[in-house]
Length: 450
Ligand code: ADP
Ligand code: ADP
Ligand code: MG
Picture 1 (spheres, rainbow, N blue to C red):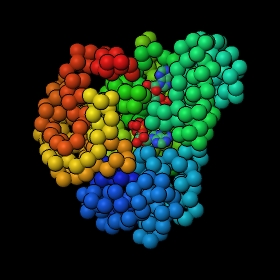
Picture 2: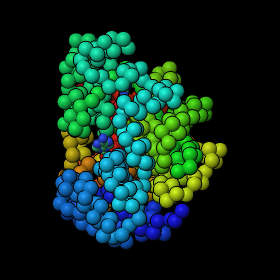
Picture 3: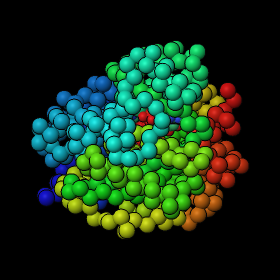
Picture 4: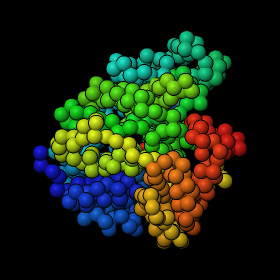
């Protein structure tokens, strides 16, 4: 049960900085890797060592397994933290780490294989008595089968890629006549984006909330949950604002959803931090949709209300330390909320806005946390996703959290590129947002002219 002395961080941006900070606090040396486009990133100076892994395109740097492993061998690390995105849910990468005797800080190879395939995860959920969205029992082989199942469960339906992620690989079929076109479009998008055209079918839940449960599991079979995050505020199935607790979840529902998430994790022999995602319908029924086998972008809201450092716990678990908390130790304190600040232009359909940041002034004060890697003079590269950072607030109540978030957004200055800050100021003023009346269609319905 030797704790690690050196870890390589196989990622970039705010999450690379987040992991480096956790390492420093645990007394672990960190190795940062960077592409040529990221050579001026300031967090590289927070790491103990840095290694260039190639040119700007991700395929030749952050997604190139041989380069990451070579950097790990050269710097003699004991473990690799993959962050989110990139190689974090790639079972082949986790397997190669294992065969090189480098600990992958995340779940087992089998966990990633089983849960990364959404149809397999769904089957496991059904077998563990976790409620799933009505739909196909497994992969849908052809149009006829898909149409038959859709008629059985009733339109509208959602055709989803088994390998989907980041909100891609999904198509709605509202009625029978549009099914075949939607089915083909979903398969084509899935083949292009994920090199896997397999799809399955779920009933389209109308105006649901997205409510997910954070879990932690150690290598000895102990699993706990850390309450929920409400991520209903989405644009094109991608999360923008997240909060904990959910305005729609009471203690009883939290206990039931938490137990479902823990059951699923136990059934798969899960290890590490993970998130079990559910949809919550208007009647208060919840349905499993998928499990993310990694740290999530929105993990800080859970950290704020539970007081538990999830990245440090991931590292401890990977080094073989048993869970330090029992379920009854987990208490939800106050209310936390996060806005994902992107370099995008909300007035131009959220088009990416790379370029040089000429002025960067961070908000601060009581209840404000900013996880960001950018600074005045930083150039946002056009090669990667446009996340500039996450603004997180933590106060006693949701009402106070909203006031603090509005104030922090007002203070936050980023000049030189377009950002989503003004968009969030609008969201935080909206009557229904303030009331907590949210569903996944909120932005399209109230804030974006179609
Ligand atoms: P989260 O719930 O953590 O916000 P997201 O779906 O927003 O999850 O994904 C986090 C990051 O991982 C984003 O950068 C997203 O583009 C990327 N990502 C997620 N799933 C995949 C996938 N299957 N393939 C490629 N990138 C993915
Ligand atoms: P991804 O892997 O891209 O994150 P998910 O299965 O988690 O895909 O779904 C992403 C989002 O798509 C959900 O948060 C929700 O907004 C929407 N969604 C997914 N499945 C359904 C469904 N059956 N009915 C309605 N909306 C859905
Ligand atoms: Mg998801």
